[in-house]
Length: 420
Ligand code: LLP
Image 1 (cartoon, helix red, strand yellow):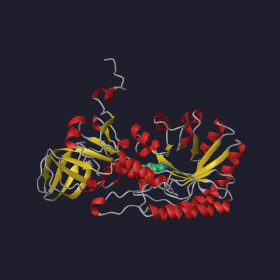
Image 2: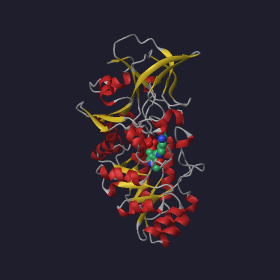
Image 3: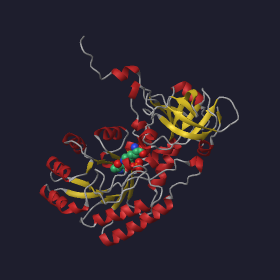
Image 4: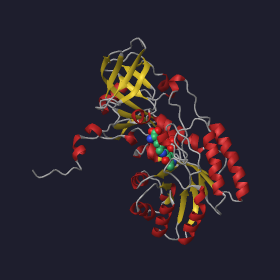
């Protein structure tokens, strides 16, 4: 294997001596490959974000729900959030205990709430009606409420989750109604939560958002915790020198907020964060085979098997993922402008548009970087394509298959044929 532009994976020693051509030969293309070392490193960075002692990082499992992934995160001592019974199920299977799981429910059914209640999992509700629903299912129980402090942030309008334009959270103007419902059902409000959105690289919106939710917290007596949500960004453009999020600055700002709040509130409550992307994005690379290279007028395309069924972020949000080019034999880089397309029959099936990259040839393998968050977890079988296998590179360099590729039979498994 020869890397034509492998600076990023070299710096992380991502493949630990494994040859991507051999991995693809063994597990097929496309293929998600993860680095255990990077998962653990990112977990530790966020677990130790602040000096304040009562602090928990809850991994936001929606970013990557792989069982092995969850097991590693659990072994690092993080807790986990869950949006659905499916995420709870996976987290319990991965070894999280019910006390370590926090269900952040949005528009869930009574049956879904009951699923969490039956397993002793704390629920955070997202509207007055859902608070009443919870009260009628579990009167006298403990509950948390998601507030919308009005400050949103994120890399795309689809992932900004606070502010008046979004469906999330309860506005502070409804605090009296929240109190009323809590009283009617004899519920104990143990915590409040917010999530301003996904991906900030500058700490300001997160610290401003945190101030807003801490203001709301002062309206409630005797809380056990405030959850500030996730959104910690990663540099998707490392090949162009993009800097990392300044975690030191972030931690210091949060520590100051926590100290001031605790002094005024008169109780040493806990603080939680809910990072998904930061823990998982950089640990995953999507490997894809180049099947064809062609021109359409002035535009050059490399045709791969990384369709948007496999990684939807570029098609869905216009997201950027750096690309590395790997060839079997050494050859000059000869950079040129090229777009990387998938194998789905839609023109929007472009994983990287007009990029300056080393010349790509059929038979090369491309590494789509930073694909560990919202990559596999948003995969689909569109065009009846098989979702890829997932492989983990252990800290000692060994590779383990952690999820098998779909099979053709699985595609039809749940269908019921007509009698004809
Ligand atoms: N907490 C809640 C309540 C959330 O809704 C989310 C993400 C997180 C935590 C974790 O956010 P993170 O730390 O990963 O930014 N599919 C999009 C991102 C959607 C985020 C949804 N909510 C993407 O590929 O960029």
